[in-house]
Image (cartoon, rainbow, N blue to C red; front, side, top):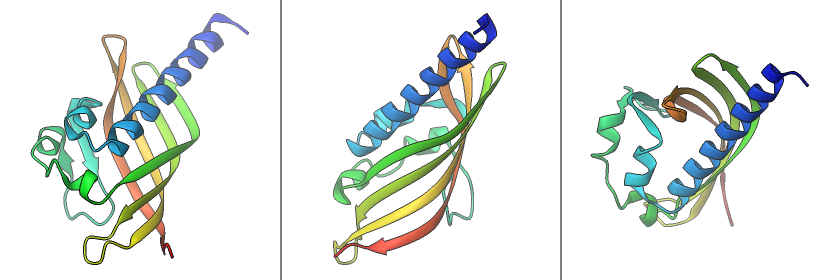
Amino acid sequence: MNNTDKSSTKEKEAISIVLGNFAQALNNGEINAVTNFFDHDAIFIPDGMKKSIAANELRKTDTGYLKRVDFRIGFTIKDITVENQFAFVEAFAATTQNRISDLKPVEKRSIDFFVLKKLNENWKIYRYIFNNVRELELI
């Protein structure tokens, strides 16, 4: 393994850790911690939204929502490509949350795409988009 391969492997491991920690912050319902994973110029494009959400707007979201719906997420990384200070990540996500209307748990599957940007040796989410592909009501 040459130095480039070692460096790439190290970067991919670091990115995997960042996304794992991001999932943990979401699972803990800590919106302030969640926003710290985003670059200041980040854009978030959730499934079904009519507009993108800037990183500074995430800080203004309902801080109790993730806890109220008992939101849980886990990522399975399919591929990571690192090019200079950017990384492109294809992932699958599995989520569960309680539907607001009746508190029944709902499971979703999505395809997630991240662009991360390396700033001062730290990877930050620069772009994040996901597309729900399946929703199941848990019984």
